[in-house]
Length: 322
Image (tube, rainbow, N blue to C red):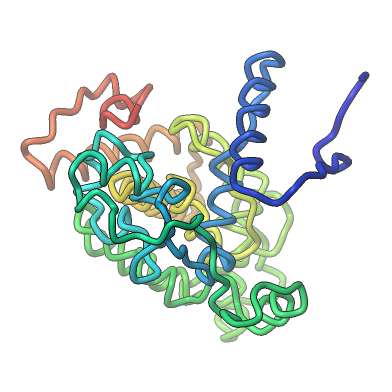
């Protein structure tokens, strides 16, 4: 085979979780042999964190094919989300229900049904999953609501003024040039982005798509070793950026803090260029994000032992995430 592209590849097989796990093993081997990177987190986040994961639950049979922490087998919410602190401390994060009961977390499973575990489609528990039903579900709802994103801005380790700024940002209530023109405060001829890119300075452009400010996200992703989020709206970008950390509550909290530091630095740099005529490089802006995030964490947690030089290069190592 000379070349294979994911978009052109179709895999056929019997639908089963055993095949899903087997496919993952194949992709892991592909990573090792090719040196390329397979984005498992993006796939899992779309599945579990998106529309599909919210509409399925697990019906436990013998417990051998149900993950104790990460499958939604009780109250339609995974235990890793309901009891995040316990999950962070757990040594057996990938244990099945049957394995946990064998370790003494129950009565040995004698009361369980002697049948295979199976998934339930909540919108149609009687009829089961159908393409028509899923299509109707997808076309009748928004993926990310403003309330979903707003709930992430109030962070205990982030200064209140930054959270208030983010609240205004998500509602497009910042005095960007587009907003000032719409209120007749600024003339239409003066609505271009302060970066000099020649594009109209809207909120979405300034923080996401600007060739100068938008390029900051790729540097941040490299610094924290995360996947680059591709989204056209700020609420969706915030949600995807945070959920890219996976199910760990501590990791999600870290990603929230980094996102808030990013938009805070971008807005300050924009004002610096507009009102003082001075400009910092994108790499200097990244340094500011590192500084603010480090200071916020140290200020709010005196027992946190962070090495400044380690944080500058490997924040995940400093927080014991890797």
